Image (cartoon, rainbow, N blue to C red; front, side, top):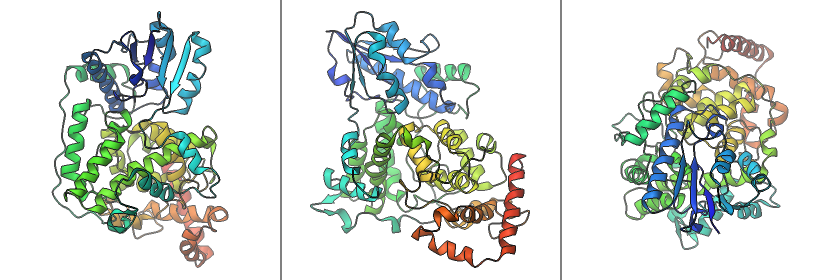
Length: 505
């Protein structure tokens, strides 16, 4: 029985469950389709990364003797289903590893009736935890907490375990991982010159997606399995040792600091989460990187990445409609243009628009914090995060934005909203030194907007948030303020919103 095996753009692994069933009589289909390229206004660099990585992966499969049908834009059909119909020919069955996004899985579950052949959807087992295992873990729990899940992950996998105890004698080392930035020489980034395949993709993106967000050039990212391994090795040797200490730090003009550029490669399938964690752990065991750096990095993959995926699949599709804080303000134009006098936001957005990248504190405590405290529309801000980052796919983006950034799930993902005034930004970065606003001022024309928006956020959400024990201290502070001060904050926020609406903040 000849099969057609459909491989999606974020499934670029020879260890894919569907490809393990490949037989000589089968064919593998890969297709660039407009429906997937345009359902979100994806960053130009993301489109280029995905298409180039797909084409290189198809070429590598062909060199291994796999019969590959590659359907490139602009000739390719507009949808994946149409591409399958065009190339199904005499195949008796269609085999697919389950997609990562709910909307696509929901479509594929109807394909068998549409195509008239057997359609088999296989589990995507490139993760440490299956969807079924996460559902079992979460069932009956009064509270879901990533820390509890993460510790079980460590025990189940043996990663960073010394028998029954965690390496280093504790489960995490966050107290060592919150240092503010100290100016120092950083290791240079590895740059990968675009080959002929990538050059063709860049021309395609420029011609067909010129209206999409972001800057296309320069494009110097890893796009092959070999380059992905080089990128992993470079991070482990050059950046991992200091990653932990400065993982929450931010600095003007420094886009990556000691962070990695591995998440897009893992999410595409060019690297497996297992091999990335193993490489980091080996750096610890060989004395190359300290435990605080390695544990902090491993937690992002073995803990957080697995946790948000499990939450997504367990709670969709209803999760997408949560809006616990009734956040409905329109998304300001500055998120798309990057133009604002707030230096911290302009820096994070410059990095985002230029590189399709911002590290997790920029996303959470700069652009995300501002979205939270100003009460931006949930759907709009989730769509924005999905559009602008190279590593954004709904299964990982939606929980991080709706739950972690916006606290719209009422505390299911995070035990408190990650709201902060300008003081946090001042402590963790040098941004405030270069800003036209004064971080120590609450009101006035030159007052930091984060300050008034932060206290206004707490005041307007008192009914929902005041009972949270992690916010007790800030509410005690708020309670000491008189009506005149609270009224001044309200007036400041109203004035700032008029400036946002006029693109003048």
